[in-house]
Image (cartoon, rainbow, N blue to C red; front, side, top):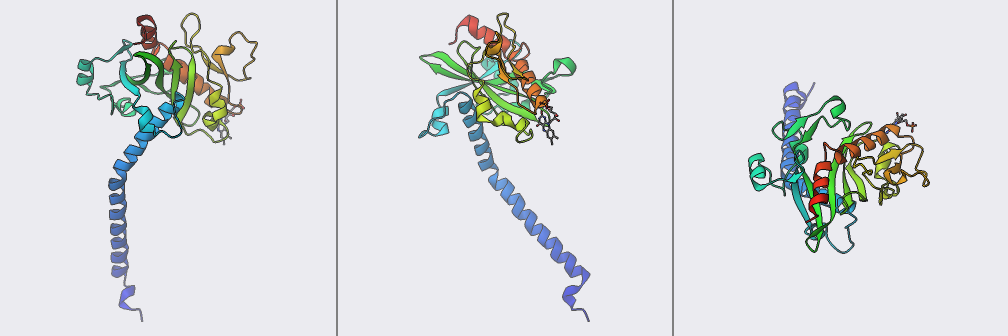
Length: 266
Ligand SMILES: Cc1cc2nc3c(=O)[nH]c(=O)nc-3n(C[C@H](O)[C@H](O)[C@H](O)COP(=O)(O)O)c2cc1C
């Protein structure tokens, strides 16, 4: 004879109670840990910006070093720093501006398609954060956020340029989902180091920096604009070329960098 504890009703009640208790724990953990997650995300973003600019120093915290970095918002259409009136109208606080969220908001971004979207980003923000490191009141280096599609994923990174607004100081991705060992080699420090000293623009001001599939021959007169492609990852490499050329080109930061070059780097 079955005991009363084996009844279907009791089994269902125990299962449902267990689900309810577990879901309360999971929901409480998700809500309770959200502020910690957000602050870790912010710390990670700052660390990646500093890493691209070669500014991480042992013995100093990320926040200490990041305090020397000025976050500004640029109007990508005009290439000028956004005015307070523009920021108010767009509801942007430079310290908390979430560019990924803005790129999904039709009020703050433009739809791209076909040949207007070589980096396959679908929408481009109207305003972008840029990060300035100054020395004696003048820009010493600038760090620009870039992103675009590889083979499997959208890759997000930062490129740091010298105050000629042409020479790369550092480049790296902080989020990407390419295959480890193939496209995922975009995270390899040896490959990232190959970008240092490369020049983004040619004499005509075109953003020509690119990955070279067969590697870079140092006797090639274009070698300063080329970085070794990732072996076995032609599609990710093509994605990297497309995204850096897009973001440093006319639709990206070129108008802003041209303005900085002509108006002086204050
Ligand atoms: C499981 C698997 C994962 C792959 N991951 C990547 C990748 O992350 N990036 C990439 O460009 N190619 C990747 N490929 C290879 C591409 O399909 C393609 O063959 C390659 O980009 C061609 O590069 P190659 O001309 O340098 O050989 C992967 C292939 C396989 C089978």
